[in-house]
Image (tube, rainbow, N blue to C red):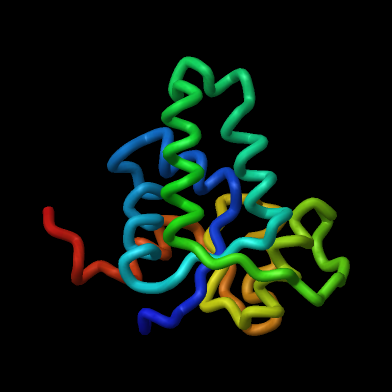
Length: 143
């Protein structure tokens, strides 16, 4: 993997990474940031922001913490306007990730969503769980 590798993380994996420091999702996100580039479309990033600000997360994050998370994530990511507009997934909301992955020739999509995982590989783009992504960097793990 090269620093130019482009990674897509789904919203639930991102939320898990920020919710549970030291979790598999957290480690996967840190490795993605260190070893490549996270990619979002305006739509995928907006979904992350909307989910992060759901009332159910009030007990975990203050408003200021959420703003800091959003700013940090935006700072280490690039934003692309997808051109593809295909319908591939049984959950149409997930098509935005798949279309983005096509347009950027993503190294992989990191997700725990079965609607996405069932498509692995998608047009030669791996769709993998955070634990599989973490294992790609097994030599980096210090235990």
